[in-house]
Length: 329
Image (tube, rainbow, N blue to C red; front, side, top):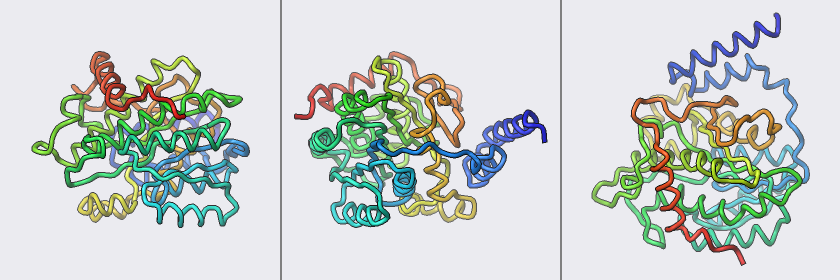
């Protein structure tokens, strides 16, 4: 078949699936794109000598991403909140011959985030990718050690602080480092609203808090790209509907209904690894949002576009409450 026709068919199929959403985000969407676009015939660049920091790696998408990075030769610095699971999972990865370092931190604890920033800075001379994957959907309202609702603390404030503290390492390599935020398509119904993002216990709903935090992650990705003059590449993505232990625990009804069409963890992790490894020229403008190696709009529902003033407000709130001006010692 003529390569131009193949590309046209792949592009049309992608657009059609994304317009309908359900087939796009399911395992069908991933498999169709992988086949139509010939991903299996594309040889990824080796990552020997590159350092990847990945949070939330002990299961699901994070473990699949860590495994693939290790296979490509990257040095792994893995961040987990549970010492036992962190140790056992890291040992399993190291047993495959991967170069593995670990740090322990709940990303919602800002003091712990500062501590691991120091550990990472002391362990490595440069950083090639920082991947924010940690985050869970909690049905119950809890607060961080610093007094913030835990969803926003672990998925907005903690990653903002860690990014701020590791920027010097991301700037120190031969090529600019990359920051990748793993978001969720569940953010689409939510509009950025800082007041609602930090709602108290009386108005807390786990699914909504998660969606609002993911919306904030994506809007911050845009703002990091706009404000950064360092050459660091900022991208966000959502993995589609993936069969993970987190989905089983947090959304059991959704899981039971959609299980036959859910993606594997490896499929969910594919775009994370691709974003970290692909030639920067393939990514286009900084601050993109991706699904299955395709750049996507961050708004699908009318009325959910963020104003620049609200993004500025979110940025200021993160700076004020994360203490991001403090550098690792």
